[in-house]
Image 1: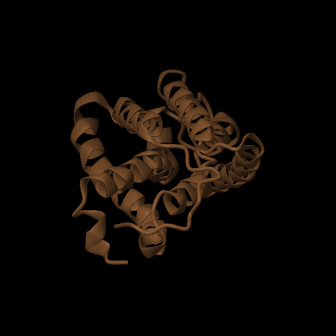
Image 2 (image 1 turned 45 degrees about the vertical axis):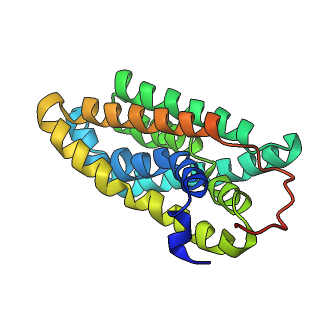
Length: 205
């Protein structure tokens, strides 16, 4: 499909933005509290936070949650309900990390990182939903583009974080951006149409 076709029709562009919006918390959490775990640890006066260990516990939890999320989605025959559940889980995890943060390295590595990872176990569902939202002539283009669009939004997230960090501190800056990403994800989720069981034999006009 023509890549420009995603942008020259308002309906298609709206669907694209919804597909991107539901996945924004993934690039926020993976990009800030996990990738910069040592920085967040230092801001919390926890100086023995290990980035490799944080990433390991985060991604193991996220991978297991992905299996659970997709399995339940098939059982209840809904993508949208799982997005709603997981985006509320992520909102809770972000609030907990910001306002009731870990007090030591053990909590950071083995409680908060797995909790954040579990709340993002809908990444595979993001890709599935993107594929089911568009016709066959644009399906492959969207399915490969949406994850990259989501990842590219970390540029915006990092700029905003850098601007806020000097004013309100690392933890509160991260929390504010996390709340913004979770809110956008929830708004996108409630705006999306259910795609489970949809007849995919159609093309975009």
